Image (cartoon, one colour):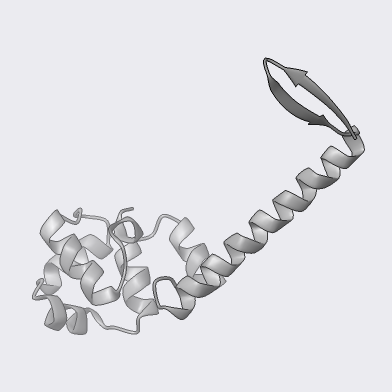
Length: 121
């Protein structure tokens, strides 16, 4: 290893192959930290694993409310009972005929255990 000094600072100079290897190892280390963070969030119930079929449905443009309601195994009536939102409004939202306003969004996210972004189509 060589060193060089510039503006009163000393720098290490290493072969490019060593630098590239160190960069790859750092990237692997960062990935491992990210994986551990996700595992901890899942264990602490701050995040969850979502089945692939649910993710595919969410990407189709269908109603997020309907997809999440079905994934949480709730009927429209049960969602109504838990939120107080009328069945007709739930139906309109699930059929993309009405947007979710903020008060309803808050109710739905609380009942379904979601974040706001999960329900915004």
